[in-house]
Image 1: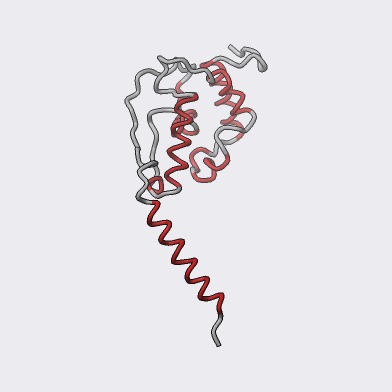
Image 2 (image 1 turned 30 degrees about the horizontal axis):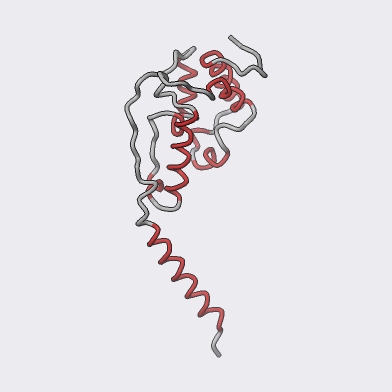
Length: 154
């Protein structure tokens, strides 16, 4: 007795594999370029920079550590997009240009928006303790300034 769903399942599996192989031809997501670091902010302490490097630099600097799976589409597309957007909003390696979101960074850490949950899930080094998150937020506020709604913590 033939089971029709097995035939459909086989076709769906093969079709999915073909699609996965074909999307590897899309060039987006493989531009793993780390431009040189031009200038950094005047960090309030080496500890703040180290915490920022641990939790923020992969998306918000030119020192991105590109994961091996970051070359496989469609994951590569998501990573490239996140890095491009992160660098555009706040880039610790290009401090000579305006950083409009800099004063919001401490609040983003305090409110748990940064680093994003999906990033923490995939990168254990970014899972900071609550103490380290508080130290990072305080250090970012001192280094970059606090947003008006939090007040200035300098």
